[in-house]
Image (tube, one colour):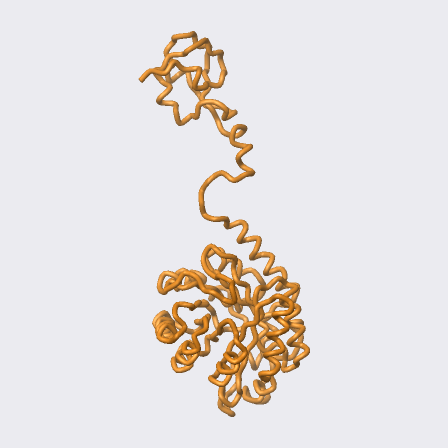
Length: 354
């Protein structure tokens, strides 16, 4: 097990900046120009990765497979899922164009393969790794095939219980992939109800497997994803589109470019607020310490050589003298000089005895 994942020189894991994956998916609607515009939009929003999907419809689904409920809601009940997906395929040449485009603008290209031909195609392109969809968490033969390519893989785990995730992780570990594995907690509904996000499962996956854990967020808006980061997610994946009014199965559950920009901003702001976990005064607090903390102060005029008693002492601002934590040590000590009423005690105020 490894606490970090390496993707094209990027280190992903606890204590590192969250890897923000803009999921273009099939929101290109089969239009190559639109796919390129999605790359540009993800880059402008500040995402680290833009991710597409690759599949051969005949390898993915049977001709008479019904649409999922969310697909019926977004595309209507007419036609089959097979027909819908056929119109969303992208050729290898297009994926190569998109990968080059990503390199040119400075965003990482990523892709989810849904079948062996797509795995091979991405391998030929020299991708930095694979993203595995929740639909294939229990598809052990495909997982082993992907692991055999020896490239890092990020596994989504929607619809799965912990035992199924363990089987999937073991299948990946058995290949040439080594320990370059990431795990994404996910709720596979579009959109997913926030009360089913179950973000505490992020910690469960971390403790169970020791690999970097992220959150593939299908809830509406940008509220839930930063919460996941606060709970330890080191990767966030979010669907986005150029317009939620477009026709297609995933547009309505996606962010538009402004929303993606705001999500990136929110996560980066949250990371800054999380800090490094070391409890110590911040640079902005340090000037306030002598002003807001308290010191031991005498209630009356004390003569030189007089013994200080409990009733002689109180604690008041500023914090420029002896700390109130020294209260018991000061009691019974003698004054080294005359101390005026209300004066802040310092080390030199006391004639310290063993």
